Length: 75
Image (cartoon, rainbow, N blue to C red; front, side, top):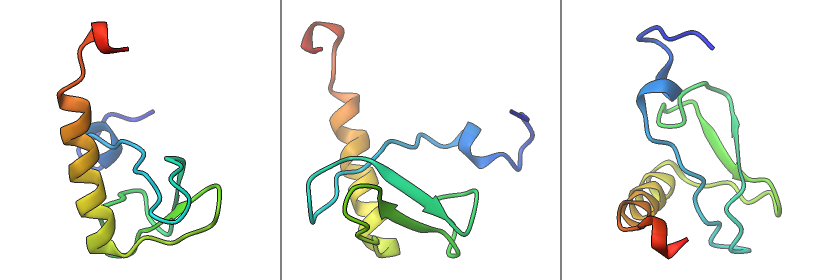
């Protein structure tokens, strides 16, 4: 995988976000290589729900906060 500045997945903490429809955290990325770009379509791999851009950003921020609080003993 290239490590150039354009490779946004190398520079962004991307975590799968929970689907508000089915609760699974298995996402698809269509239309872009950067999930935060306006052209990106983030969906649920399980039920095909498509996140709105703001909805995805809010879910990603919540998921990042959730992972920040984890400790090895919690796993």
